[in-house]
Image (cartoon, rainbow, N blue to C red; front, side, top):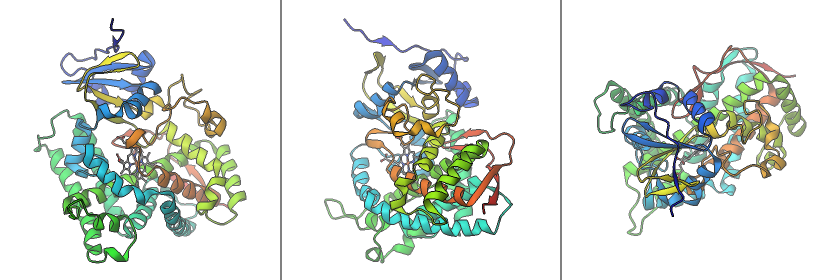
Length: 448
Ligand code: HEM
């Protein structure tokens, strides 16, 4: 006898579009409603697509980890992202070719390498703090500030290129692409429809980003062996037939790493500052802790493990405001998740934003409480109740890079400055990434 049951189905408000419009209007509110009404897993329809939202950590673990071979990235969101912006880089690729590329890039993210990058992180943070010293008492947009700092770090670490000069242009194009792509995905129109005004604007933003990447690659041509970084590794790689990576593939990989490698970390840091300015006592305690450990120094690699408090703040900020707030997969063959049957070709949706705030797994989920990430509490938590970097074989390649970088930057900045939010209401904006809507203006005051 077959004991699987159908997943509970939410009919949606529109007979034709199902729940597409509800999701488009306010995805956070829609998913929150689904979580409170269903708790584990829920099926719904978005226009012609059958969707299952996996809310329970066990269901997430099944998709990303235990049965990951049955879930690929042949879904509309990634197709659109690839088609319109990133090409076929690590994030959007799939199958054996993805694995080959992942193995090529992986050595650049080993701990030994990250130790080398941490010297760049430290130097860039020092320059950044010096600039902020001259802006004492001013209001800055922390979102933008963090984006240019993390862009400089990723550019220098992986591609040996200081992108400070290009930072405003990249920020502008990426922000545009982030908005346009989100609207384009929710339009529900298939990817081959390429004549919407949105598509033209997206193409313009993408062209600006690609031309910057082309410049980075052109500058390196002929000098590959003089550098020992990810760019040279990718340029020197040869396949079984001794052929180098073709030019468009190289461009896609560089663009992906450049964009995925800075925007998410910038958002994580922005949310840290937002939460710390809403919780001044926590900010003062963290500042005292960092000052006591670092004095007036900036952390290097060896100091990071002693900055446990700063690490817990970053983890807690990514719980409440996960910079990557959703993951999509296609179910390849009929399957069963937590006893519920799932048909082939169903779009599977996992959302950090939902599961990280699930009251069954998080006590008072909206309270900012870094102590949740003490070793003791972590040990008792269900796997995949927390997955800011995804999981399984497609786990974020830059997770360690991002954590070390965030701890170095956060500890140095809170030790040197007091940050006070000046905006009454800060709302998260659910684009491809989760950003503070309209930026995050903060008054910075130098500490004595
Ligand atoms: C706080 C910072 C970051 C967050 C929250 C984050 C989040 C994520 C998540 C959730 C995924 C999995 C997507 C999926 O399974 O569909 C991912 C993949 C990826 N991330 Fe990150 N990321 C961060 C930082 C970075 C950094 C610093 C880099 C590179 C320097 C990076 C590069 C990538 C790449 C290339 C992938 C695709 C990996 C693959 O599938 O092989 N990310 N990231």
